[in-house]
Length: 141
Image (cartoon, rainbow, N blue to C red; front, top):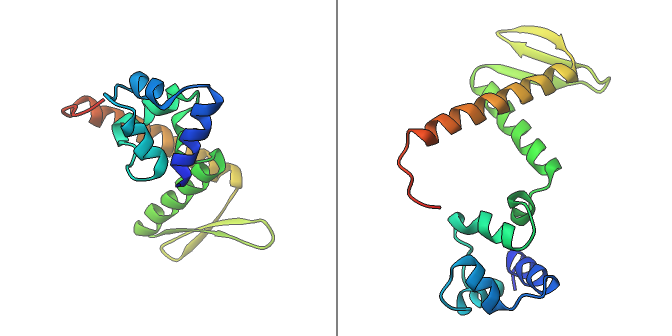
């Protein structure tokens, strides 16, 4: 079996649901769809992730296997990659200092400043993505 299939089977059994019951909850016509997913022979469709998570009593983040720590580090990595494209670099010294470099200049910043930047970027990105979704044609879910 696979990791996600194992998770689905374990959570389904913890809830006392049969494959047939879970299939019905998720709108599948037959339990074979759930069986194939649990065996790793089929993937969970992207559009069904929220429904699977809800049916199994999980958040979509828990269902996907992403921990809050992994999400935070992933976002930080993406932010630093984007900064690099614009010529900025964050350097974390052994002494615990955080240095922002740009155009040959160096600026001492705090970890709090970096966290605030991450928070602001996440909020702005969420706003922009929400705006993009509003003006786009919905194709699923």
